[in-house]
Image 1 (cartoon, rainbow, N blue to C red):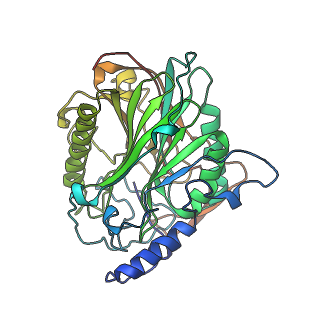
Image 2: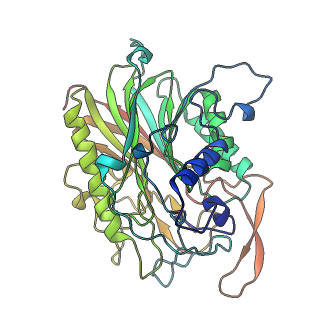
Length: 421
């Protein structure tokens, strides 16, 4: 789910779609400079100088001299609206967000537009025989709005720190709606907790996905970003092939599927194509790398399949292979455990009636993993913070509390069985 305010124009940097290749390269470098493009020293200035600590790498797919490895994007890529979904009772107002026209539709070849890297063999870690039997995964849409960004990102870093357990480490976090001002606060904090960051190419519009991988229990073997063939928002798949200290290998992915742009452009056709493309990529990767036991899809899928008037088909029936939806696996039809990660009734910043399970964690093959528990994160308002919100019906303004994001985070604790591929 997206929205955009007056800061959106600044994020794009220009409203002119025709940009020379040299200007594009320069703007990429300038955008990278906002969060740091070095794989070893990114955001070092933001880290406390009084603490001496090892730096953990940020794997940035834009840090390359090969323009062919990185997909060119329109400066109007970041397009969204005031999230009017079409239900009469589902109107949502996100802090007076303005609307930016969408970019033109793009169709990109995965062969020529994707970018990926392999980690040197010498960087692989040794196997720890005392490794934990289970681990945790989180997906979290950060909300790109510049509303108390420092406080919100510090709160999310603290939430994630509390999730990590010695006997069940938080191995991977998938983030969506990452922009440089948020990354400059969140990424250094996660580095101090022991995470490496894998980040989508920033290019002209510094907005996208990222992943945090825990260094002491996981080694990144390779990583990359693949743009979807059909997207007017230049969405795609951020992935990392990872070896845990148990010697098990996994394909972790995160994404932000096409967002709805009102009743006339719900984005359902694009989402249906994108999730099948993502599934095919995961299945192909498991086939290519026999040691990879399981693929994990995390992200803001913007998937609406739980109503009679849903725009999207039931996800489990739309996918070609048997995937395990972590929340659905544990809670099924339990009406007291709805699992809404975008909840206008419970999130103090939003207001309204829009409630959906937009953010999901999917595991493949479905028989290779056991979901032990799930948890919704970030439901509490941040103490002492508020913002002004305008009622869309009468234009009255009132103060509301601030939460870490407009989305709640979703956590799944997983045990993966051996040799089930």
